Image 1: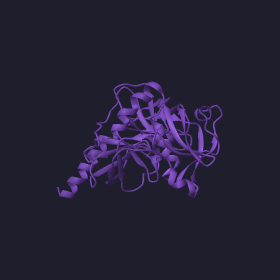
Image 2: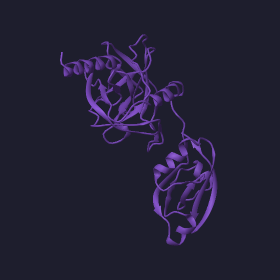
Image 3: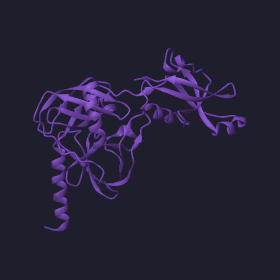
Image 4: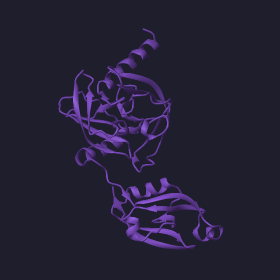
Length: 293
């Protein structure tokens, strides 16, 4: 057997090993994938692919189709947890991503149809953890060359041995992204137990705004976030923020884009925060208590 044939056979074995735990989620107008997370009937999938449903049909790799209940989901990470009434599921081997390097070969696994489908790719970039625009925390950045095929959201990213490195989703950005094993291990128990993950919020609608030239030096920045609307009875309104205020910083952290505000509030649930603002042309500070949602 040639070297190329050996590599090809090794890849096929890896697909079979990792793909055994990949399932199909039946949608009204589309299909997506899911991955068995435990032999006790827990699976993970992409939250956006559920289309707001609380119950779905799940087609397992062993041929069974079972009713699945949505135990919890988190829009911040685009992660959802499903439960089927079955035990002894073929749970794949999950691996931490700390050893993943640029240049490693990886397999993208999905089951939008009857059987496992796979594409071969390469890790093109890795990086530290980050916050999504929706406020979720992803423990490690993994970028794979190529775009995620249709129906693969909720499927798996596997290494060349068939060990799973995370769950893929088109909900993390153009071309798709991977929620690493570390994030899944942290999030799944909380979603299964509580149905959601609380994050801090203020109840404001903001748009980027530019400071008047005369205030740039005193503020130490040129841009902030203009309060365009307030949620009636929300934390911001109750704390004294006004429409037209220009937000500059939260607890000393500069905010210039809506994503900055989402990120800084994410871990501050029902917490007291100090917001630096510009009101009527003058800098001031407002102490608020964040809400949770």
